[in-house]
Amino acid sequence: MNQEKIGKFIAECRKKKKMTQNELAEKLGVTDKSVSNWENGRNMPDLSLFKPLCELLDITINDLISGEKVAKDKYQEKLEENIISTIDYSNKKVSEKNNSIGIILIVFGIMISITALTIFPSESSWGSIYSIFGGIVSLIGVSRFSKKLTYGKRLLINFGYFILFIVMLFLIDYISVVNIKQAPRFCYLKETGDNMIIYKAPLYNVYRINVDAKNEYYIVDTKKIYTENTVPITPFNRDKSGIDNIIKYKNKYVGNNSNDGNLISNLPLSEYGYVFEVDSVNFGLTIDYHITDWYINENHYLEKALLYNSVSIFSLIDNVNELTFNFSGKTYKVNRKQIEEQYPNYGDIFSKEIEKNNFNKYLENKMNDNDFVEDVFNKIFNN
Image 1 (cartoon, rainbow, N blue to C red):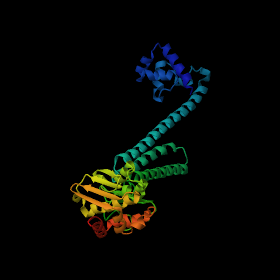
Image 2 (image 1 turned 90 degrees about the vertical axis):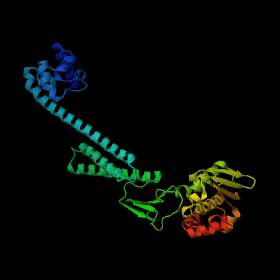
Image 3 (image 1 turned 120 degrees about the vertical axis):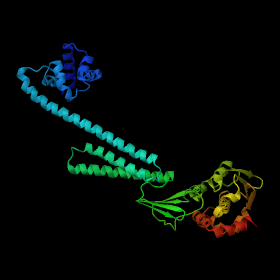
Image 4 (image 1 turned 180 degrees about the horizontal axis):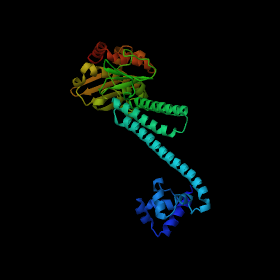
C-alpha cells in the first residue's frame, strides 16, 4: 500500500464531498488529527474503518487501497493486487502490535525486578519472588518476538534469555552483598548460629556477625573455606576496625590530625562519639569518649575495645608513646612500654611492619577470649 497516494486520494474525495476534516472525523467517530494523519500519509485508517469511509466518500474499497479510481477493465486485476496488499498490511499491523506488546512486557518485567530489588529489604523473600516474577513477565515479552521461529529456536532463545536474566539478578545481588554489606536475596538456606546468621547462596556463603548490633559486619566467603567454627569473629565491626581497613592509616608521626582522626574513627568505641587531643611534647594522644565506661562493658566490651585500640594505635603510629582514654567518670592510661612488655605476642604482631595474619591471630581472635582479655587488661591498665 502506498500510504502517501492513498492519503492524497482520501483528501481529494473528501473535498469533492465538500466535507472538512473535522466533519469526516465526526462521522467516523475519530479525531480530526487522525484524518489529517491519513491525508498526509503518516498512517492508514484502521481496517474496520475502510467500509464506512468508502461509503462516506462514495468510492469502493478497491479504489481506496489503489489510491485512485479504478477503471472497470482493470478492476479485477487491481482487486487481486489489493487483496494481497491488504493481507500484507494486516500482517504488518499485527506484527507491529505484537512487537509493541512484547517491548512493553519486557520493559515492565525489568521494572518489576528493579523495583523489587530496590524496595524490599534484602532479608525479605518478597524481593527475590517479585524479581523472578519480573523475569517471567519479560520472558513472555521475548516469546512474542520469537513466534515466527521454529520450535527449537524459540525454545533456545526463550530459555537462554531467562537463564541470562536470572544470572543478571544473581550478579546484581552479589554486587550488593559485597558493596552494600547486606544479606543475599537469593540464598537457598539460612542458618542461625552463635551470634551469627549464615546465608548459603549457590556460589558463595555470607556470614552475618554480631546480628543487629552496632558492631555488625558481614563476611562474604566466595571460596567457601569457612564454617561456623572457623569464620573470623570479633566483637567489633570488622569491616571498619579490621587490619585490612585500618592499616591504610599507618603513619610515622602522631599529630597528623587527619590521619589520627581517621584511625580513631575506625576503631571500636568511636560509635559513641569522641574528641581527641595530641600532646606533641610527650608524643601522647588523649581521646575523650562521650559515654560512661561501665555503661558499655557488657561482656567485657570496654576492656576488649581498650586493648584492641591500644595495640592498634601503638602498631600503626610509630612515635606515639602514651595513650589516655577518658570516659564520663573514669580515665584509662597506657604507654608503649606497657603494651610491649605486657601484651602477649606483641612482638609477633609488630616488629618493623605489621604482620596481618599475626594481628588477627594474636589480637583480633584473642578478643573473643574473656579470660585472656580480663587477665591482660588487669596487668596493663590496673597496675
